[in-house]
Each structure stands twice: as structure tokens, then as C-alpha cells.
Image (cartoon, rainbow, N blue to C red; front, side, top):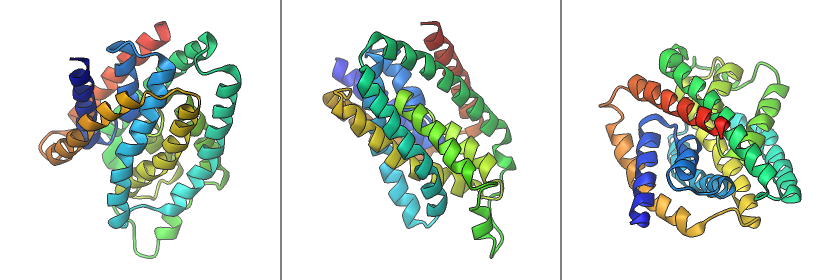
Amino acid sequence: MHDLAFIFAGFFVGLVIGLTGVGGGSLMTPILIFFFGVKPYLAVGTDLLFAAFTKMGGTVKLARAHVVDWRVVLHLSAGSIPAALITLFLLKQVGAASATVQSLMTTTLGVALLLTAVATLYKALRGKAAPTSVARGQEAKAATARHWSLPLLFGAVIGSLVTLTSVGAGAIGVTVLMILYPLLPLPRIVAADIAYAVPLTLVAGLGHASMGSVDWPLLAKLLAGSLPGIWVGSHLMSRIPERVIRSLLSVLLAYAGIKLIAL
């Protein structure tokens, strides 16, 4: 019975990912902690690899469509991956399963979910304000940040946040990209966000796996449900108002965030 519940949870999260592009870490980790009683360190580690595998297919599809700005991905990865490795090193020194780290994970996860809720609501209300295309000859300018150091700095913050909580590479990442690259069209912002999340979650997830923080059978069940869920969600995207889904999702994330902080 538990197996079916995990597959259904994977399908539900996959459906939300397909509909909105948000939901990997921000939904799956709280679901595993609250509904299934999974320890925070196992929930985070398992969800990181869940996110890596679910976003990998999307990245291949976007790369074939030539909408991924690899320069943007490279700049963010230059900050996020070293930060993820440093965070993993510190987690290994202290012990991922220790009471101190568990408490830090739940509190930081709660804050990350509140930030994601705000970012999701902002995108629901103001998402259409971003440009949808870029003028010919302006591609290089659009893919250049306000300052060269900002992608490294924000990438490092997101890298640490994702490694500690599995949350941050979705709605927070999109909002950060909209601020750093105001001329970049929205489809390219979303594509860059999905693409740079793959190496980040893979590095962080494998790091957690090396510490025994990944439940492999659980991961297989979640993926078995999520892949069909993403397919269904992507096909329903044009029929359901995205603004309504994002607004409801932001309320759900805020509620989960407050509950985690109060733990």
C-alpha cells in the first residue's frame, strides 16, 4: 500500500512540474517529511536525485529546441557547484543525520519554502511582464548579467540552499534570473533555470548518496510516478490557467514552510 502511495506522490509532483515548471524540491521534500514520516536528511538527499532525473529530460528537450543560454548556465554553475561541494563537505564533517543538522535542515527548508511561495506568487502575478523575445543582434547583451559577480554570488547562495534543503533551484532560481538578466526572454530564463539545476542537483544528490542520505528504492517509486505525471501535466498546461495553479501552489508552500519552521 505504501508503494502505491509513493508512486501517487511522484505522479502528483510530476503533474505540478508539468503544469508550472515548479514543484520538484519545494513539494516533494515536505510531502516526504509530513505525509510519510521520512527523516529530513533522507528526504533531502532522495529528492535531490529525484529533481536531477526529472529535469534531465526537460533539459535535453530544451537544448534540442535551442532555447538554453549555456553562457548563463555556466556562470550560475560556477557559483552554485563549488558552494554545493563546500556545503557537502561541512555536512559530512558534522554528520547529516545529527540532531543539529536535522534541525538546521527543517528550519532552512521552511525559510526556503516561504521564499519559493513569494517567488511563485510574484511570477503568477507579474510573470507576463518579462520579455517574451529578444531583438536580433541583442542575444549576447540579453545573456549578460548586470554585473559579472552577481551570477556567481547568487549561484553560490542557491547552491548551498539546494544542497541543504533540495529547494531553491525552481521558483527562486527563476526570480533571481529575472532580476539578473532583465532583457532575457521568459522562455530562455525558464530553460536556463532547468538546465543549471541538473548538474547542481546531481552533484548535491550524489554527495548525499555518499553519506548514505539517499533511499534508492523510494527514489525508484517516486520516479515511476513522476515521469507519467510530467507528461500529463505538460499536455494539460494550455487548458488550465497557470496563474490560478501558481497562486494555489504559493499558499500551499507558505503553509508547509510555516509548519517546518514551527517544528
